[in-house]
Image (tube, rainbow, N blue to C red; front, top):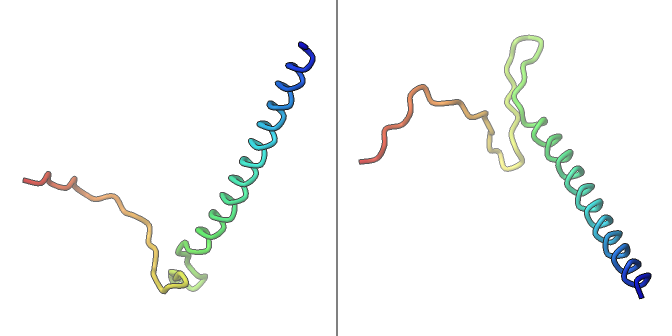
Length: 76
């Protein structure tokens, strides 16, 4: 009877390990795609000194967020 319990336990661990591997591969794959997509939208300078700001498909221009010089005043 203990062999059956051990087999069931190892089988459950194997199934969990396979799903964790699948999840990790999906995460890494989507992360690589997103990094590539974001890299294409970063501004860059040409050799002539011209700054190129790429647009997304919907014609929106993404610009990096700049920290504010002074903190915003709390609402009254």
